[in-house]
Length: 255
Length: 266
Image (tube, helix red, strand yellow):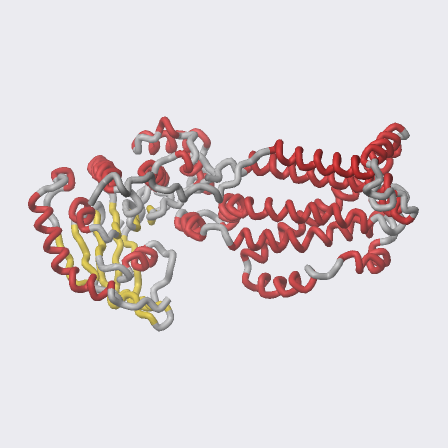
C-alpha cells in the first residue's frame, strides 16, 4: 500500500504549521522525515494516520491493505503509549480484542510477535518492570500484531539512550530485512535517518515545507555504525538544516 | 592551595520528603491519648463532665455487646450505609465519567454539581422526608446525595487526568469507543476515583448520624443522638468509637483494593 500527500497545508489557529507538502511513500520503503524542532513533522505524521485533519490538501492511501491486515496505518509512539496496568501480553492483546478473532489465533499472533521482538520471556511483566528499550520493543510487537500496511513512527527511539538506540535500530533493520514494511519515520536524529531511510525528506522550519528529498541507495542491511558514506550523507543533511535549526531555536513559541 | 587546611566531608543535604509507612507509631499515639484521658479522669484533673473515663466507655461497650443491642444498632446502620453509599458512588462515578467524556454534559452539569456540593445535606433532611418518606428511603437518599457530589468531582478530575496519549493510541489502533472507555479511560481514572472514594465514604459515615436523627429507633446514629440528649457521655463515646472504627475499616478496605487494583503504579 502506498501513501500519497497532495498539497497538505495545516494551521493551528493563526499559526501555519505545514505548507504545501506533496509526497509519495512507496510500498516497502522507509521514508524518514527530518527537520528542525517545531517544523511540524509530528503533525504531518498525525495527519497521515488520520489522527488529525489537514486544513487543506488530501491524504490518499493507494491500493488495498494486504489480507490479514487488522489496522493498515499503525503508529509507534515516542513515549511508547503502553497501558501501565496491562502486562506485555495484555498490551499486545489489547489491539486484537476488537476484531473477534478466535482465541487460538490471538494466542498465535501474540506468541509470534513476542518471539520476533525477543520478548517471549517477559510476556507477563508489567511495563513498570521494563527498561525503555524493552518498552519500545513491546510497542513494536503491538504494532506488528495488527499486521500493518504502513508503520507511522514518531521519533520511536528518541526517549532511549544511545546504546539502546543502536540495538533497536539493528532490530528494526532485521525486522525490515525479513519482511519489508512501508514506514514513515519521523526523527530529529540524522544518524537514525541515514541508517533507516530509503529516502529522507528534509523539512524547513515552521511553516514546514519540503526543502529537499535525499535518496540513499545502499541496502539497509549494509549500513553500519560509523560507515563513511553514511557519515558524508549525514553531514550533507546537517548542512541543509543547520541555519534553519538555529533560526528555529531562536524563535519565540506562541503556545 | 593547601589541601589539609580546607579538607572536610561534603555536607549531606538530601533526604526527607519521603514518608514511610509505620503502623506502630499510629497505635502508640492512640494508646498514649487514651492513657492520658484515663489518668486525667481518675485523679480528677479532668472532670467527669468534660470527658468520660475510657474504662467506663469500654464497660458500656461491653454491656452493649452482651445485651445484643450492639447488633441491633449496627445492622440497620450498616445496611443504610451500604445502600446509600453504593447508590451515591455508582451514580457519582457514572456521572463523573459522562462529564469527563462529553463537553455538553460537562458544560451542563459541572455548575450544577458545584451548586449542590456546598449545600449541607442535613439541611435538606425535612425535604427528603417528604420526597422519600420517613422510613429508610429518606435515609438512603441523604447518604446517597452526600456521597454523590464528592464522587462526581473526584471522578471527572480523574478522567481529565487520563493520559491523552493512551487514548490517541487506542484510536490509532481502531479500538471502538466502548473499548477505549472500558480498557483505557476507566482503569486510567481508577487511582483518582479510589482516592475520591476515601472522602465520599467518610462523608457517608458522617451523614449516617444525620440520617438517623429523624424517625430511627435503632442505629448507631440514633444511639449517639439519644445518649447526647441525655448527656450520657459513656454511651455517646461508645457510639463515637464505633463510627471511628467503621471509618478506619472502610479506609483499610480501600487501601486493600488500591493495592490489588493499582499494583501497576510505579
